[in-house]
Each structure stands twice: as structure tokens, then as C-alpha cells.
Image (cartoon, rainbow, N blue to C red; front, side):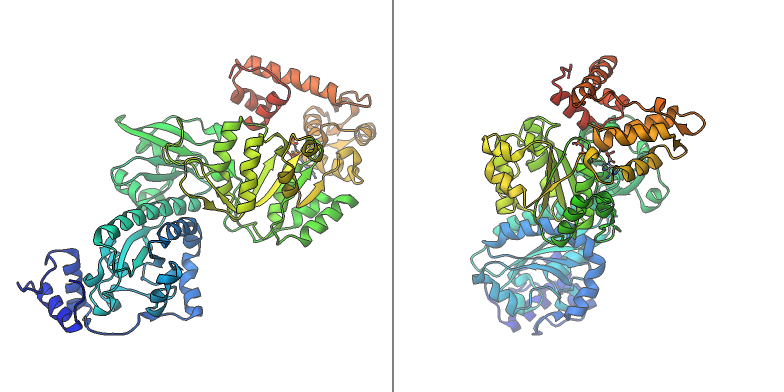
Length: 621
Ligand SMILES: Nc1ncnc2c1ncn2[C@@H]1O[C@H](COP(=O)(O)OP(=O)(O)OP(=O)(O)O)[C@@H](O)[C@H]1O
């Protein structure tokens, strides 16, 4: 039925709703559309012939309504933007509405189609509740909490007959209805089948939004993905394996309720699997029910704090104190921090330069915390700690099935995880040339192409990188891409070695307070500490004082407690030899197992890998 007059449509609605056999009754009387028409007539008392625009909110009202949805919209936005880009050329407008059917996010299609949506007020602030607008995609999907396609003359009000909308409801991290994702088209040439396809795409995108909302909400918890017929379920649990959250599918799959979750019920009462909590990386696991029956392959992801140091959600917008504290009273650093603060709100890349252990990582975190990105993720990657193929996958992400061994649902990659925040690339001088080219492209185009992806993902990151090498020289010699080098050093900050710092004594005092709080330094110990050149910088000083705090007798650290290897102008070889021997011994003791050796040495696995690589130590792994 291409175009119906308003009066014919009224007669049609009445005959369908009243189940009268009539030539106009072209809609199945038991269908969801017919049921909705009945609701509109009987419960909402609406008139199918009524004309007029939808209710719209003022700017202030929109802000008020959007406030409780702020986090949900933020977490769903990357997927919404993707969906809008995919459907734009097909003429669809894309919206996210809250559970009351008020549109709070809108992306219009190209110019040729956009005017129609503007004229009909299909944009942010408009309300499409079924109780006002009658049967329509948003209102009806939200009423029924089910995806729906409302094609042209299936709308209750005749005035909406030039539109088709496909809508998927969106459920929040607790499985509650949070809103719906709507796509609307006014193209006459698009058949129902085309809209059905677009609905499937929208449902899939909405499922990914729900995943992002769940992961964002439980970013400090472990997350297990459990396969299920109605889509995979997500369960969040703490370090003691107590369940702290479950999405709608996981609740349905395992019979979890709010009450059970609030009681901190043990995960093992529902699912069991083995994984290595200490590894701090995502893992594919074999899942079993509590009674041992197999549940298939699942996936376990560690808390974001372990891999990306995500700040707390209540973190203040910007905290420059840490940066000032790190600069201390060193005039050169104080100047650098001043300059950094003056460019703080810009996204200028920063290149940190300094010897090992001077505090490049803590400085990078402080730059992030002092910036206007502080509320978003700080994501760090050590380029020297991983083989090229792993950096590629970790950094740029990949689509599902992009390569053998890839995670089933693909991986967003660290660049996308850092969207809106800061990406810290440590030991950037060790980044393989092929990846330098890809990174340069990301910085230039502000988008990333995950491996196997058909389209790029837009990203907004601030890049802070660090190196102990002379990148300028490497660029001259062709060992590092010169164009990338110039991009990285929007601002270059040289972190002085501890022996060069004007405020070295302040730092020794501060670290002594932190590492050996119950001890005082004897005069001889103080003399030794303040004269020593510290080839291992802050890290070495910390280790020396930590050890001294343990061996000191009667609360006094003497020179005998200080393990300061002799320094003959160049201490690195001695220190390096001792360190190498310690690592080789730890690896030997643990049968070449890096994870266990790292634990014994109290180093992160990544740091130990980096050292193994730098020292060219052979391992069994
Ligand atoms: N200004 C400072 N005051 C006190 N401790 C510091 C300071 N800067 C860094 N540290 C400490 O020194 C240690 C090494 O810091 P960090 O890992 O940031 O150094 P790095 O330069 O990144 O080292 P690497 O080059 O080996 O990666 C950490 O324990 C850190 O807490």
C-alpha cells in the first residue's frame, strides 16, 4: 500500500484493530503492529489522522534528561558513530534515545536526505513515545523491549508514512532497559528487505554498545564472556571471584538476579574455568558449569587497571600536582612542566627522553593526570617488551578471525582503548619500522585500521612517547622514520639523570621516607648516598633504600646497609653484569619460565621481557 489517504488509513487501522475482515485490513490482526495499533486506540486513545510535529525539548530540558545517560552515551558513541558512517550513504539517520523515547544523540545522513529529518524534527530532543506518536519504531520497540521494523504505512499516524524505522532496544550493565538505537529512512526505493538487513546491522551494533557500556562500567573488575544462544553473556567479578555484575544475557543464561549479585555470590557456583590471574592479559578459557558440564569456550579479561591504568570514574578532570611534584626543585624540569601546563589543553604529542629509571613512565602518567583528558583512559605499551606481531595486534587491534589464534570477538587495540585519553608508548625507539608507518598514519589521519577491518575507527588520542635512545640520530641514520620523529616531538622533555638533578638531596630524603619509613640515615650513609652517581637512577635509589630498610638495625641505616656497587666513572657495565647474573639465575631457578622469574624478581613480566631482550639472554620460552 504505497500511499494511503489519511481517511483510508483511519478506516484501515480500525478494521485491523477490530479484526474486521475488510479489503483495507492488510495487516495481520495478530501481528505486533496490529497489537500496537490496538494499544494506541484503546489504551492511549490516539487519533491516527492527527497531524503535527513530535514533542521537542528545549536545550535546558535536553541537558537535564541527558544527564543520567551521560556515561551510557559516552561509552556507546564510538559504535553509534560507526553505525552512522555505515548507514549514511543508504540515507539513514541514526539516533540513540533514552527509555522514554527522547532522542539524545543524532547523526543525519548526507545532504540529499537530511532536510526531511530536520523538517520532521527527527533529531535530538524530540520524543517518539508510543503513547504520543502511536506505533513507531522507537516508541514501540521501547514499549515491547524488542527490536522492531516499522515500515512506512505500518506507522499509526498517517503523517509518518513516508518513513521506515528499525530499532533495537539497549540494555544497561544491570540488564535494565536504558534506551534504544533507532535508524530511520525516508527513501521510497528501499524495500522492506533492505530495512530488515539494516535492522540486523543495528541490532549487532547495539549488542556491541552494550558490551562497551558493561566493560566501561565494570572497568575495575575481571570480565568473563560466556557463550549463549541469545548472544554471549558478560559477567564481572572481583579478585576473589565474587560476582559484581552481569549483563541481561548472562542473567538469563545463568539465572542470576540483582539479589544474588548484591550478596556477592561466588562465580564458581555458576561457572568454572582455569586462568592465570597474574598474567594480566586477556585469555581464552574452557568454561564448565558448577556441575562440570562443558559450557564451551569463553574469554576472560583482566581489570582495566591492570592493563591500562584506567582512572576512577570519579577522578577529577585535571590534577597537575603530580607533575609539579615530579619536577621538584630542578630548574630545567620546572621550566618544562610550566611549558607543558601552558599547552595542557592541546593535544600536542610529547616525547620524553631520559636514561633508564629516571621516571619516564610516572612522568607520562602525570602529564595525563594534569591534562583535560584525565577522566579518560591512560593506556601504556612498552614497545621493547613484545615481538612485532604482538605489538601490531595489541596496538592497532584486529577483527574477529583476522589471524590464527585471534580472539573470537576480535580486539579493539590499545589505540582505540585510549580514545579520548592518552596513549603512552615506552621505548618508542624499539618500534619496528613497519609499525612506525602505521602509527604515523594513525597520527595523521586520526583513525586506526584494525587488522582485517573493512573500515577505519576514528580516534582522538594524545600520544606521549619515551625513549632512552637518541631518536634524532636514529632518524638521521635511517633507523627511525624521520617524519614520525618530528610528529612525536611536538614537545620534547628531557628528564635529567638523578646525578644531574639540582634537587637530588630532596629526592633521596623523600624516597628514604617512602621506602624505609621507620629508619633514619646515619651521617656516613647520607654522605655515600648523596655522592653516588646512580646509573639506575630513581629505580636504583628505591631498591637500595628498600633493601637498607630491611637490613638496618635499631632503626638506623648505616653505610654497611647500602648496596651501592663501585662506580668507576662508568658504572653501567658493573651494574648490568650483576643484573644480568640475577636474571639468568632467576630464570634458571624457575626452569626458564619468565612469568615466575618476574614474580620472584618483583618485576612486571613486560619489564623482565624487555631486560631479557636488551641483555640478549636466551630463554626456554
Ligand atoms: N621524581 C620521582 N621521585 C621518586 N620516585 C620516582 C620519581 N620518578 C620515578 N620514580 C620511581 O622510579 C622508578 C622508575 O620509574 P619509571 O618506571 O617511571 O622509570 P622509566 O624511566 O620509565 O624507566 P625505564 O626506562 O626502565 O622504563 C619507579 O619506582 C618510580 O616510582
